Length: 124
Image (tube, rainbow, N blue to C red; front, side, top):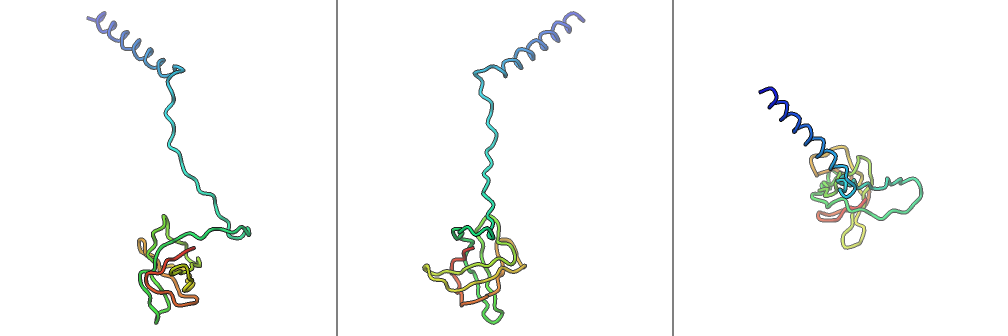
């Protein structure tokens, strides 16, 4: 009985050794790692001109309070203090500054100049 168990153990060890050696054969290609997309870090102070990036759309305007509510459809909402341009049909309607309040995809922004309207596209 002990010989039978020893024989099975020897066969199992041999199979493990052979199959692990097969993984290192030259015709077996290694599994590629997931590619990570990295975006270049933009430095707004280096003097290079950047293309505007669409951040979202104005969902609500409060003229009395002097702020707008931006529905952000970007990967990450803009950081507080960022200046955003509001455009309608390619014409600038105003400039807003992102505030601290944020809930989900919605961000508040104070109106700096102009008169942005609901539905205007917002660019950074």
